[in-house]
Length: 113
Length: 116
Image (tube, rainbow over all chains, first blue to last red; front, side, top):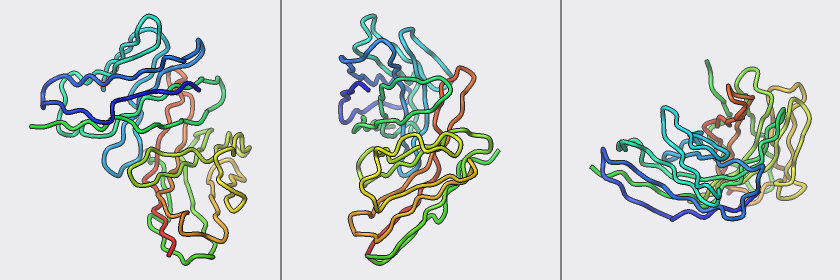
């Protein structure tokens, strides 16, 4: 699975959009981009994933560049409860099977009042 | 419905003892994963199962670590002859195909293992 690079930390004002970047320049055609977050000492939580099209769900939006070498996770109106470590993970999705997640260091997002 | 549960939540053991950590996945989930997380680090993959079959154990650090899922539901991670470097949070996750087949993994609360 391709390696990802994320900034170690970011700040965001409460109520503003948080834009978390991720570089995955070695991504291959069958690899998906997944985002998870981990709040304090809880287990990681799935946020969103995508292949090449932009995706949106109730938690966030995922913007993937046309060349797929980078992506941005957008939390449209960040709240204090969004303070967490955000992990960008690239992996092959294998139908009818699961597959391991390779977590990097992630980005520690601090949402400030 | 109930999420992934793990027991015990905290385990303190003396060096050299064996420990068994239990994971109860979400009912009906096909895949079950074990990860280990050191303080300040992201989770590190250990092993995973589809049903009762162990699909990948490449992350198990050495032969003191083993895992089983004999009936395709509950899983046990066993560490023999524990060492201080085994101290960490051990997390279990389970998954099944979602609405879009995304195989999102649901994580349990973890077992904090401390080897003294």
